[in-house]
Image (cartoon, rainbow, N blue to C red; front, side, top):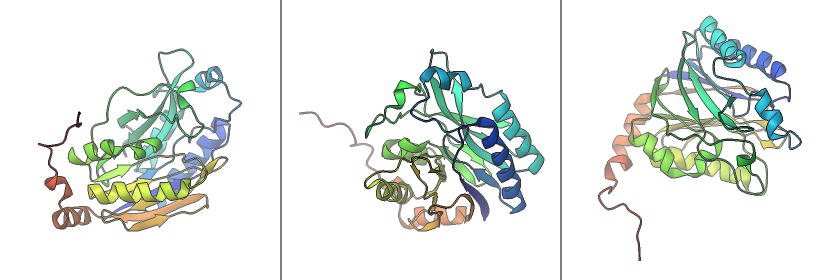
Length: 269
């Protein structure tokens, strides 16, 4: 068994305030004997509708900047792995990447992923401020199993989670900032459960709460059982993951093996 800590937080507009809370959460997660601490999307700071693309770009950092470096030091000091996100500077003027990262317990950045699916839907247009990533992430070894990295809106594209699972992922970690709205919580819970069931893997989905976000951070097991639902509370939730559970479910329900990839293709008239 490997213990994961899920942080559900309401991000402040000030980067320094959020960073202080993040470092305390990392220490608390380690104290609770967690192997990995996972944070939501946009944990660096909350971006309101009044913040311009230029303002956001000016506040973004490189992965070698103070924000990620401070988290790396906390991971090393507390001997715990951390999954988080930050606004990463991009070459394009007034655009930033929405980037997630895995830091190992030695404080090294083991992997990073730039969000490829921008949330241009339901009245939002992330592409006005964000630059999409241009590559898909490879699964990476972590303390809780081979991990696939996704971010929020990526959940609505099952091709991505299937690709990560068929490439070896046993756990999908999906930092999110799921916007409130009609049926949105139902979508959130249903989609997280579906991604777990169809791929026979764990889904760990820390979410923002408050501001415009719905909360409901989740951990779902490979057969679709919800192990953790944080509802609307801020703080840390704990779940224990077992790779034996992944192997058992995939043996009994061999969806990855039963795929007919020889026949899958777009059908043209």
